[in-house]
Length: 329
Ligand code: PEP
Ligand code: MG
Image (tube, rainbow, N blue to C red):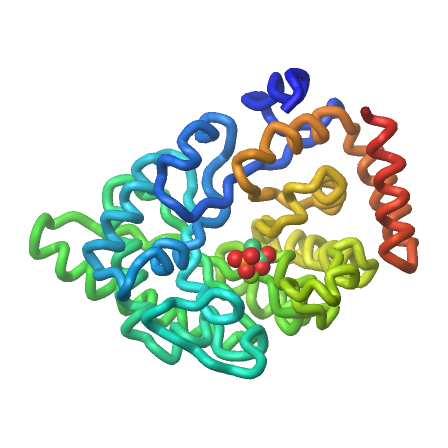
């Protein structure tokens, strides 16, 4: 990183004309790997719990998961930590839980698996809530939601886990157990048309732009042969992201985005202009994104967004954004 970029690392992500956006971290390994960035961000926007599951030869026990989650939650105490429930299937498989399918990305994945195996889900959310006992900064996020029924079912299980734990813990200590906020990933296109219904059920939305791009465009996110078609700058993806922002505002529900788009200067600029409250990214991108935001007036970002939303293909969007970013240096 150039020194000019490094210098803004611990400054707020705020435009010169005073519009702020919260920057959070994407994480998944142990707490140590992002320790250094802690003071520069507003929390963890996406903790991918599948990664500790992948590192093992069997499902981690409730106690193992509790220890692991507690390490992260305690490390970030006073800052929100959004833990996503297990999101395996698709391209991520566990050696001890093989799934063989012709179309893994359209198959048994994320919340679909954990609702079919409530014992895995219950154990995981119990571990999360146990780990949250002292720090009280846990938020739970549900991946791959495609319908309202899945949310109802997941909330029912979370309530059950909370109820059971609370009664067990009263036995030990007489302490009360706080119920964490629960949100969903917006990454399957069907939910874009049910945001009003979903806003009544959950506490926040977080867009998974990696999967949302894949599913909106019907382009496998990992297939090199169609890689040139996979772009979040496709006008349909950008209009969807903008629509999600407007709907979330209308229903007063906090909105973040935790896909790779948030780590790209052009992407972050557009998300700021659309009105996203938070963006979440890998630690090494934080300084660069802050630098961009601190060098573009919000009113300019809004003008750039208005122009971008008039283009009819991704190449025009990308060319125009590159031109605008070059002017910034
Ligand atoms: C996404 O889909 O954008 C996302 C953040 O989740 P993952 O990349 O883990 O699927
Ligand atoms: Mg995803």
